[in-house]
Image 1 (cartoon, rainbow, N blue to C red):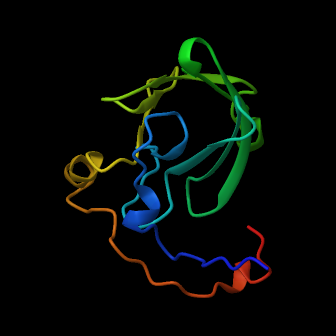
Image 2: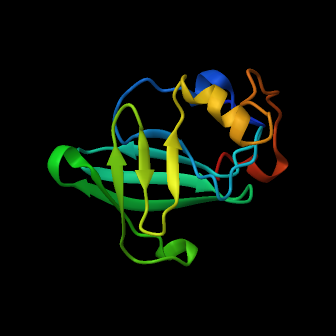
Length: 146
């Protein structure tokens, strides 16, 4: 079967994605905490135009579903009701050089790309995303489920 390593914190290789699209790892500055998964959003697209997101605000993970529409698929729709938000929230994807999703409340999620590493260090108290993280078994996730 498949083997998965449980990361205690995000690693640099895990975070950085050079693809210029609306999928990958994003940081929500309203919840982001350096060296943890807090404030991170992981967006996948499969099949085309169908989006899935896993994220954490406080260390506990949640899962949302959505889709993308519009010219070059720049309208990002997600149902935030499972976490107490609106049923359909629409954000705008901005490709390179921004690589962000901007939400109606003004919150801007930045995609984890190499050129953002330094700016996150400055904006979040000098910390950087760690280059390594210890992998430890977690009693709460021993069954393999999140």
